[in-house]
Length: 307
Image 1 (cartoon, rainbow, N blue to C red):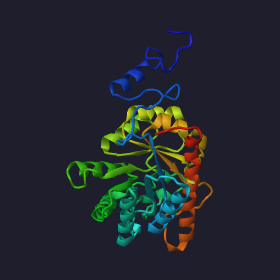
Image 2: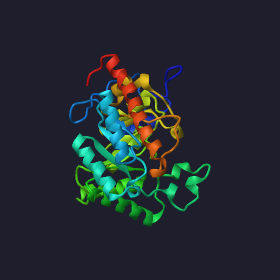
Image 3: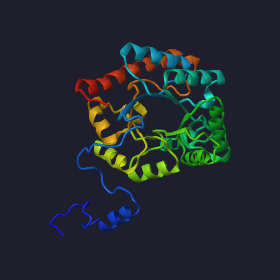
């Protein structure tokens, strides 16, 4: 053994743990550098842009208007208030707009512990339970929310509960949901390491939302583990740390491809559940998210990155 062996050395002091992880097909170390991912989206691209917290058709139209103004291609919009917090007409309109503009529309599953009658999710230490589902009734409500959305033409949902992900993944296999139905994990269902990413992919996740505070090296290790697209916040919300990583965009694409680059707005109040009482804020923040995305995108065009 060397005088001061690395804990990453397969023959070093942590050789048993390294061997155990290797035998399970799990990455045992973060990348040393920032390796270039050879993986791509089906259309051959390395990156796409997602605008989160697009709460309803009016906000969606604002996003399109601002994107056109800034000549920015948007590939996916997501919403956080939930399927159950929009009318059928609103959902159908969002789906129709998405189809016309060739933009994926992803709505959050409505039921969640944070809005249930339990106390843990709103306690000082219980926030981690906020996106979960308390009990079998809430699980059933969540499944019903997804099936209802699917009946209206929705083909992409945000999932914050591990058990629900497993149920929906199995539903796709058995034909209860369309084969092309997208199961996107929420940032509230933390994906922070290769083993967790592996489990989420195996349960049926179509795309993984990573924690907002991972280094390039940590992201590279997760990318080496899974093939599905990764969703990475370039600018994160305040209640998830609020990182602002615009200058990292080229390297985020390098290590994480295929990757959805997500742009929210720091220093803004929460929107969930959304409604007419805060519609002005919903639309103004939607517009600003597109502006922020254009700044992030400029980091690629400025340095002449292609694809």
